Length: 232
Image (cartoon, rainbow, N blue to C red; front, side):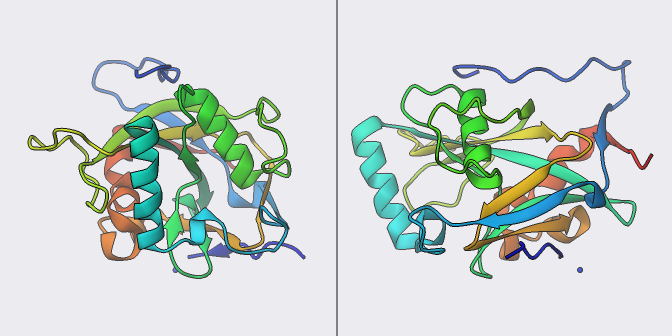
């Protein structure tokens, strides 16, 4: 069954830096039309087509964060910002779980895992046919661009901030966003319990009530770039 594709109305290792531009000029980002990409679905982890960490409740996530902090300390998550063009406007590809929460593709790093390698692994697990089949994820070629933002969660149940609060003695989570350079064409395959949506930047801008503070802040993070739509 095909995936329903909808349009909604340095740490350990540094990502490659963007190409230098003339002083005062924004860095260009090439964006290809949504029609260049193909979409499919596969069974979710466990083969039941549902469940998983992404569909867990807020209480479940808090318990998991506490357990991870007790075992490994600060949790680091990495997420990719993938852009496509539709109606001459940039759209962000977001995962939606069971018609409810919206997520950027990505997830938690393993202890000692480097940012770029971990993000490639998580992108493959969320957006590729390989899913979680291969722990050594060099299976998929993802072009990881520069880190465009970093957020901090000071407590297990706290709202993340784009800076470390002065009273946060032991932050619980660091969340990093990286710009992903998509090729001219590729196939995206996501678990059946998720949908992959192309959401316009104008819709998520400052819309934390629907998308959460991190996704709602993406348009501001992208304001330093100039968008070059490639329609040839």
